[in-house]
Amino acid sequence: MSEKMHATTAPSELEKQTVRRVVWRILPFLILCYLIAIIDRGNIGMASLQMNEDLGLSKAVFGLASSLFFVGYFLFEVPSNLAMQKIGAKIWISRIMVSWGVVSVCTAFVESSEMLYLLRFLLGAAEAGFFPGVILYLTYWIPAKYRARVIATFMVAIPAANFIGSPISGAILSLDGWYGMRGWHWLFILEGIPAVLLGIAAFFVLSNRPDSASWLSAEQRSWLSSTLAAENAQRKAIGHISLWQLLRHKHIWVMALIYAGASAAGSTLSVWSPQLLKSFGLDNFTTGLANAIPYGLASVLMIVWGRSSDRTGERRWHTALTLFLIAGGLLSAFISQSLTGSVVILSLVLIGAYSMKGPFWALASGWLSSSTAAAGLAAIGAVANLIGGGLMVNVYGMINQATGSHTLAMVPLALLCAAGGIAVLMMGRKSQLRVEVEAQPR
Image (cartoon, rainbow, N blue to C red):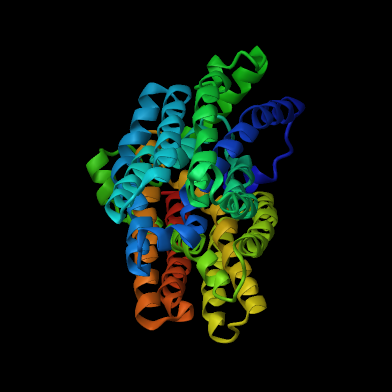
């Protein structure tokens, strides 16, 4: 059955009740966990408004420190996801969250650029595997035709974290001098503790697989397990191959390139947009409020776009158009460089960056067999984040320092997103042709 035909099949009452119960059981908790992850990953951007001066960090040094998160993330993401597949989500996700919370709190006590380098690397290593682990976990629970909207809803935590976190971080910075500590110290401490508490809670909230979910009826467990097993049997684009073969597979690298553009836009702006907005003369709290506007818009529209992708059963164009929106938004910075214009540009870019995620991950998980999904999803995310976060955050900082222009620093991001948009259309078309050829009688 084709994806589009499957998307239009009328659901039975059992299907609706089962999916609804699963979604309400696991999704709100995972969204909250990811929201805290994104706050802890990106709060260095708001902290930089005080921290850079205290530690004597140049823009290039700050960019390097920020990007080292993605190096640690890259090195440990695939092993972490394979460990989760073997050990189980409830234990492994709990371990991930507790460890990144501890590292985040420790960042409050850095006294040099070298210490900051180390802790940002360790933060990436600690968080590695959480996002692809959750995407893999959702394939254990959510049938394919619901997956884009569920993934988009889960990933609304990214813009929501910045929408909520930017004003909160701005307010925490105002605690400057409280108990003899700087505001940025309190920012890392107060925003790191929730990860530890949620990590402990994850062990009790999450169930590893549907067959162990006591909160589903026997009929619901049977329907869900059989539905997911039937879907797994149909996933053939990248079948069962070794880890080394998987990492050499051209489709993995093309999918990583596609995702790298959105990853680069989101990661780079989360780190640098507070400094961009403050350059217009705003105070810390107002900077946080202005920074929240684009993320608020992106939070709403990424869900709308994910639902549109599920309703139509279409993934390629829903992915490609968002990448072209990012590229166009970034290049429009040459037209307007006012505060209002910058907020509009940031909004266009972030709407594209986050709306892309639901359709893309639904597309990617459909291209991977059940046996390669754990390593494949992690490899795509790891490579994309290394390119998008590790490299492009650095490139932005170096160009900005060399030219003094945020606008010129956005050009490489625009080119990467445009290349990704073209790649997803070409790759999707080739996959579609292959399926049509295979379907012809012989």
